[in-house]
Length: 368
Image (cartoon, rainbow, N blue to C red; front, side, top):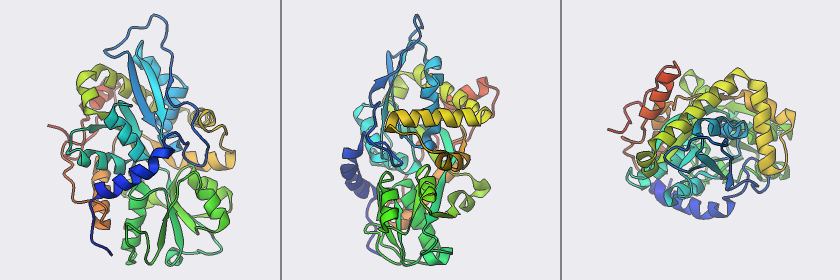
């Protein structure tokens, strides 16, 4: 394997490549249609300390809290007269760039870009303030070419992007099999082919890849095209839980508008409660949101299995984020990071206490 390079350097390359995809719907959709869309506050509702809060998320089912929260007005309800301006992103680096530039204030995002964004700024640009989802990631393969886990060796497997959350997870799994892959090039005992989620199904159908380690709904889309689930990533984690989506905020916005941050978190908590109490309605709501974003709803044979594999929760599962960082270090994509301070769960725990729910833990990685 080549000498380890700083994760930030590799991610900078990935950011440059991802910028044209900023408004592209993830999964396998087309261009986003609601980037910059502003919600309408209730007439006469009192504003909080900011007129608008700019939020970002992916049109992915793993970002279902944001999809449903916006679609059902559950986030807006908690914000009163402060309106939401929503932007959608195709990749974590693009969202981090938007947060750094002030184009968004709060975002739903995966753990790897959260870690990279925090370490690249020396701990000065963001905080993780809540969990959102666990699970929803699978290794799906062409059953004619791959029948067992051992058959993955020598095959071409897609991941969404160099250094993204699924890429790191797959590289770590490869290493645990005793196989060797150069993390940067993706070449070795397995060919890791970085392929945008929206085109992975076409790459699979053409035979360019033999499988993919991907989030939902891309995994279930591939299954609908004849692929088989070989491994559900949740089975690799204690209690079958690992962070796939959390909520970040710019430290500047958190300091200047703590009431707005708290309102968004209250809306997120209540959205997760509604999702878990009404899974079928929530699934339909998320699909409606995806249809607005991509122009096409997910068919039942895709959304049904995909939705079942995702757990929506408020706990950021902080210990698993630390483990994911260790995996990135082992893969040579990240220099050992100092993650102390990446979490500020005080606003979330205040909300949870008020809702009569258990508080959550930052695994020793909280802000002073």
